[in-house]
Image 1 (cartoon, rainbow, N blue to C red):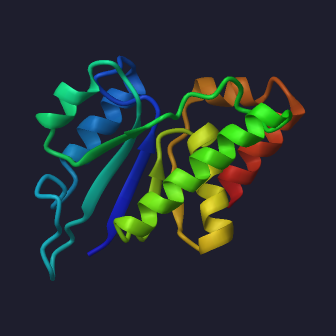
Image 2 (cartoon, rainbow, N blue to C red):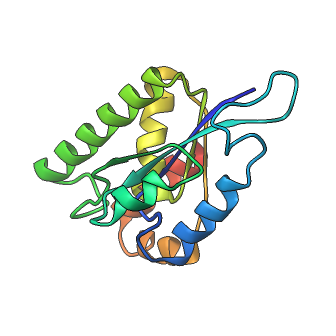
Length: 158
């Protein structure tokens, strides 16, 4: 059994196709709805770490999955500037503490930036493997600057 942490800023009740798709995928993950996998089965223990939303409390309370919330909105996906470095550092620390507290052995990211970059940092520091879902619009955004292209490549090749 593995313990998977799903990280996504876009997650219900926030509207968005990628968030809804993640919700539908992970609520059907083998063993996920129980919050614990069954020994000897392919079941995962899945937890979600999602972005904040004003209506999140009601959604999370009725959810089949354990969902925790944290700030995952960034003014910019890049690292240039003290404010951006501080935002990534704070998010990394929160995610690392979450992984340790819940003994997660893998991370799945809703996007390559910023979630994938945070997971890449986690892998570099703690060796936790990760996977990123990639959407066409993020690749277009990442191609708008050399910095974002570089960061996206780091996340995707890590």
